[in-house]
Length: 215
Image (cartoon, rainbow, N blue to C red; front, side, top):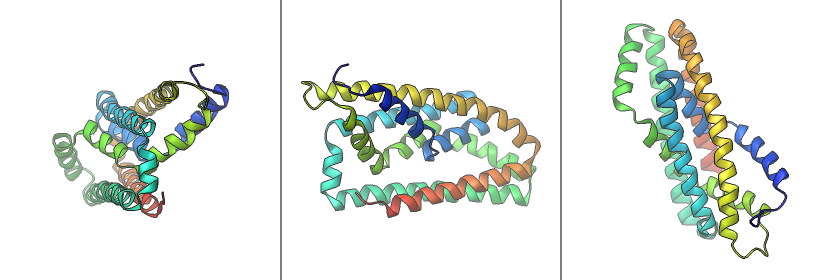
């Protein structure tokens, strides 16, 4: 079908890959839990746009450029790791505020966050500053593209469309799950502080993992 081979295997692998936790899905869940469904979908839109850009770059051969140019890969890699670290520090500072005063300070901080945070832009940046994602899309997609097909770019589009549909379904589940968690977080400030601390630690782990990654 349009140069795509072994579609069932691709779909099975795609489901497993989408379900793996990462900074994108964790951020969408965090936004939905704190600000509701609409903000959650705003963040998800940033993820989808970022993924679409990465898929396009992959099809255009940018992944090969990153693999061949260690300096360029390093610049993108460390910029992405730095951004994830900045997010992790922000989450940990917020968690510390929750521990110090689980009522007035948290309410004030959440109000300030509602003013400052731009979920779409932040999610988009998280998605784009991940050179490994570009390399992954090529390494994974190319296995299911017929080398003899005259229009391989079209095959990438088909594979990318399936990936976006899977991402939409998964992030939708996270968004609605996050809004349910929000009620529990509001009732239990200690739980909210623990979860925020854990999210910050995970983002720091993502940053370290990206720093250690190689092309």
